[in-house]
Structures are given as structure tokens and as C-alpha cells.
Amino acid sequence: MKWILVVLIGGVTPVQTDVQFDKLSDCLSAEEQLRTTYADAYDAWDKSAAVNIERRRDYRKARQFQERRLANTGTCIPHAGTDQPVAMTPKSGEQPAGTASPQPAPR
Image (cartoon, rainbow, N blue to C red; front, side, top):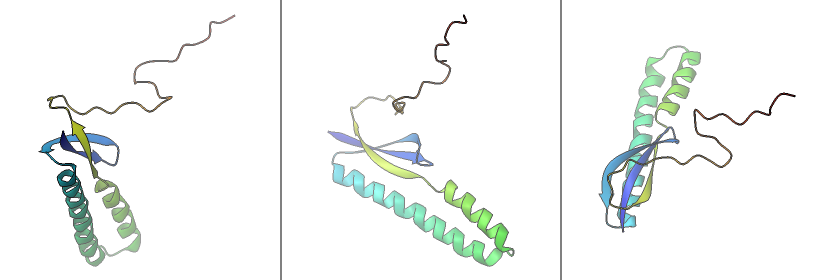
């Protein structure tokens, strides 16, 4: 079975990378490397922002924004060998966008 690395933007929206692996261990290693890269990028930004942003309030706001911006994670999923993009399945109880729940008839 092949494995594919998918990046979850903001921890939610999947983006297929088209990076395929023959072994799950190789995919998990790439996932860890992705996590480390984002953590390193955030640390580098944080060090420069701490020096360059004068007001503490502005620094806190910028830091919160940067945390959300770099809140991407990777995950390994089985790859069936198709070229179809990865799609999120709705959580139980959620309705797809554009569909309304039936309204009771007026009496």
C-alpha cells in the first residue's frame, strides 16, 4: 500500500501534496519533518518580532496571527493510486453547504 502526505491548513482544510511513500514509516518521518519546519519558521519569526516590534500589545497580536498562520499539520493517509483530490467528509450531524433542513409545514 502506498501512503500520501496531506497538509491540513489551519488543522482543518486538506491540501494534497502528491508526495507518495511506499512505507508508512517514511511518510510519518516526512510528517515530523514538516512539523519541525513549521516550528522552526515560527521560532525564527518570533525572535525577529520580539526585537523589531516596539509595543507589547502589537507583538501579542502579531504573535497570535502568526500562530494561526503557521498552524498547519501533516497527516499520512492511504493512497489508492487515483489522481482524485482528497476530500473532507462532513462530521456526523453536519449538513453539506447549500442544503436546508426541512421546515415543518405551517398550520
